[in-house]
Image (cartoon, rainbow, N blue to C red):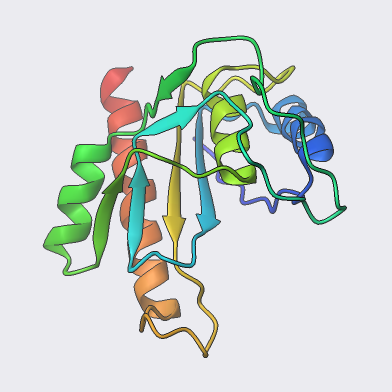
Length: 169
């Protein structure tokens, strides 16, 4: 029987890879669904590609800004391995806001996405990996995307990933 584990990653370029490695050693995930906040999101933004490059990066929570260049060894662009079409269809059928994106941004979201897909972190090598941006769930958010919509959508994302993973076995 499988297990589920949710983690909050540090908003630190220098610490995030170490934390992913610790998670990999302790849990050995088959599926890694990374979620992150994006202010411009209107709903679930399915990221199709990670870009293996630090470009005009912003300082992390510790004030560190990485130099421009590759995030890790590997290809310049990496495609999500989540069943994005199925996820999109399920979210849309449930009446949840969903959109596509080919750019996970220039912050830690793209870094985590890249490290996960490139299998560039010791002990963290999920078979399936991807990234989903969501809007802020704060009461001041003008998107109207509350906890109920968020949880319903997350359930659908997870369900589609698990179904695709089991079907591939």
